[in-house]
Length: 479
Image (tube, rainbow, N blue to C red; front, side, top):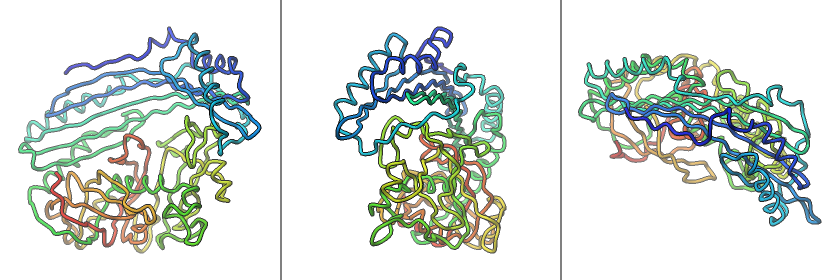
């Protein structure tokens, strides 16, 4: 094992406290308005291949972002400048650079008054949270035991464990003093047969690795490699298909990323109403499912206020500090909310609903659905496909949200309620909005890791879904 330990800033004790950087930057500001974001982050990681650790390390980092706003006769402009590893002595040049950027910019269409002060976070002046290699205290021995088991059974294990803790301090000239600690952990494991022909993947998200059950994960991988000992070939076509929670998450996250109020109101998305307006209030599916976000969702906690360093169609630097509440995007099958900033909500004539960094899909028990696990969903399937995961997902048509992508690391044929073998990979063409109307079965909602999008989105809870007529558009030679 080689170490790649890196340190991007000095020890915490030798650096200026983050909250003091916020206060000093605000003192230096000469703009009409100012928002300061300080992010302190630390990471720990392990990587392995062929049943042996290859790398491991830790890092630390700091980013200071200053958002200056300047009022003018034609409106308010904003300038944003960010730098890493900033010290107190470097703050003045950073603040001046943001002000210069604001004065050089045109008035911002999303300009709104900076968010008014709310109650300050009680720990605003505390040291940032952090992580270290200690986070793997119980996981590392379990990984060693998994290596031993893999060698004994002729398997090869590959994977990556990553833990990051980011503390964000937000201060503004209007008096905001907010803080958020965000732990993010991911584990991805691939098991392969010794000849590398059979492959299975499993991934989980975690806040601290204390809840990672590696023996259970290894058991899932064993089972899938066993299923793949029999190989079958199937043609392209529409199949009843069981999507595990990870695959459902990849599709629902893309749906959520496409649910902007501005695109919908301007006729550019699947949520646009023909002839003008949005589809808010329209039933998308007869299945009474709910898709929601909640910063306080147990185990999936995320920032309860807006943190952004850039403006876009449905986010605005002027909204920094705006409260983010629990939001139902789809309520019992009806589109109920779209992602918006204060600016885009006003333009679309909709309530303000900033995005949140988690997503949950819940399907109540009913005639077509249930609350069992993946095994029960397989057991109730007469003939269909079971996927492991989807990858290389790309958008084909925003008007229908048609996506394309590939299957990977295991597609299995289910007959008579049992998995009877592995089949070839496919390219798929499907819309996550359209498939909501073809759900024929569902498992219980559980925490999962979107495989394709886990570099950007990790906090998801989804059920396994069985969908009629999932479109496997062609056979793929990808492996």
